[in-house]
Image 1 (cartoon, rainbow, N blue to C red):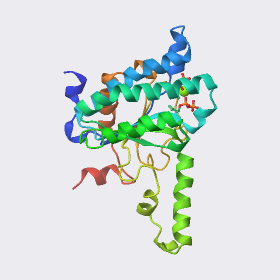
Image 2 (cartoon, rainbow, N blue to C red; image 1 turned 30 degrees about the vertical axis):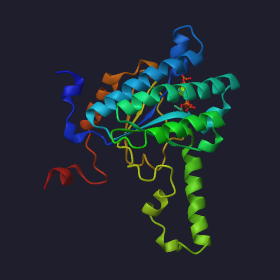
Image 3 (tube, rainbow, N blue to C red; image 1 turned 120 degrees about the horizontal axis):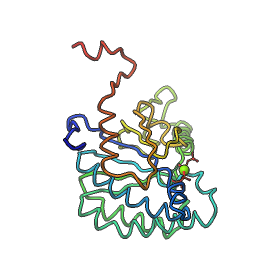
Length: 248
Ligand code: IPE
Ligand code: IPE
Ligand code: MG
């Protein structure tokens, strides 16, 4: 049986978040410069979006550029921004064909204007699609997002529209960039690194983590299916005991 056939369609994560890591090391292994690895990583994005849509995943969030990534050499940052613009404009017709809706999270106003324009255009052009939602995390940092949410809450308290005792998780979530998006059940990181790198700190509170040694440009459909199958073999207890989950 192929990997995709082994997946239990009743227990597919609604939302998968991925830290796409290892492009630079992959390129180095090929004797190329880091930027080549980013270009090749686009093929993996295409494969994963297709695979996720096929097994009924509803949301996929890809960590494409962190706030910390602005500190990379200018040449690499410029290349990543150009790649973003060219990929989004080239892929939008395919997204529409596959019924994929594009969204973005992060400090988007810090992106170069051409990038933001292309992004907003594609978000608008795909906004009516009803299949998979592809969320790109761009200039994203969870600490930035959390502080921004706190600022929104503080403003509401200050202007009297919210009482301190009414602040709840639900309320807080309304201040996050991911409002209206369910929390990921599964988080995948490639390239053998075991860290979260400022990604979705709030939203991953109860996610299952899956790490693979594969470098991002080598990641393909079967790698996503393997991660989903691994997820399906886990017992998600949410603080309860195993017995509580199995007894009616
Ligand atoms: C991930 O690959 C892509 C981005 C962070 C934009 P890296 O560029 O981090 O590749 P490595 O980790 O240096 O191999
Ligand atoms: C995390 O990867 C960010 C993205 C994948 C966009 P990095 O390669 O930048 O993470 P660190 O700095 O090694 O933790
Ligand atoms: Mg990296």
